[in-house]
Image 1 (tube, helix red, strand yellow):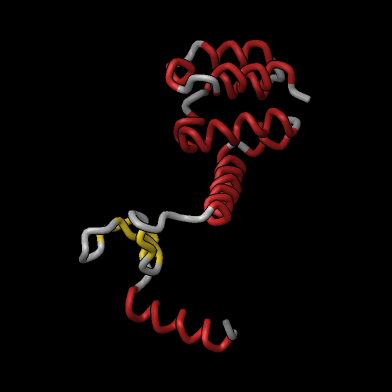
Image 2 (image 1 turned 135 degrees about the vertical axis):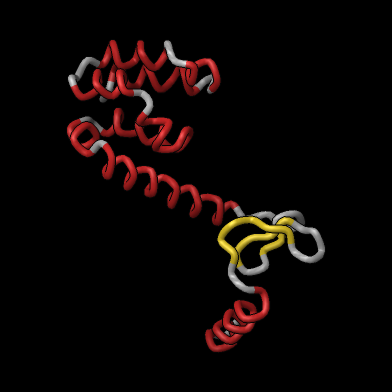
Length: 141
């Protein structure tokens, strides 16, 4: 498609469909998002899913850096991945509710941090994630 035609179509469809950043039901009752993307019939592509995932991971890191930068910046990449995973799973408020775990992480007490994760209600709810993440926290690099 020619660039001019693509731009024309974007402008037209934005005008006609509008832009909605949260899912809604269109007049035909279809679950829709963005600029008229029919999720019921079309869904999203794998490329779009990975783009959303990357944005969500970056958003988690921004939230963690805003709330607990001292902890996050002092730990290795493996342990950062644990905090990012937990933030992705529970949101920043959920992650911040792990006050004892975060205190153990800040102190470099990986064993107690991992054990505290395992003793939580979260661990009973997340299946395999609760096996892998505490082990990563315990061992690090």
